[in-house]
Length: 102
Image 1 (tube, helix red, strand yellow):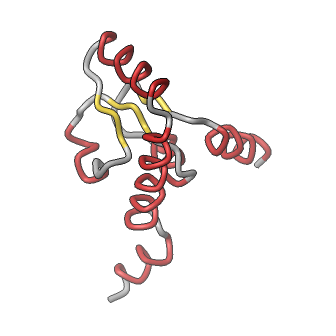
Image 2: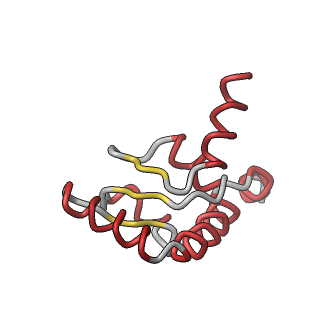
């Protein structure tokens, strides 16, 4: 339990989450914390790509995103809001349970 709480605290404090692989629970935790994500444009992410993400394929793409964030930090605020909205839409346990029992 302590490790989970610690992970949530780190994700909430992060400005940006980098997910090198395919979708994971940590990716979902980042969105739920309102943390924008930097991800490879993998098909598993498509439902969640709605303004919260930076899509990167190469190391050069990563560098460009970081430069962009440093020169325009307000973009993180916009993506943070989008991340939280996506989490509310897709990861709300009560909504998911209600849909299962319809």
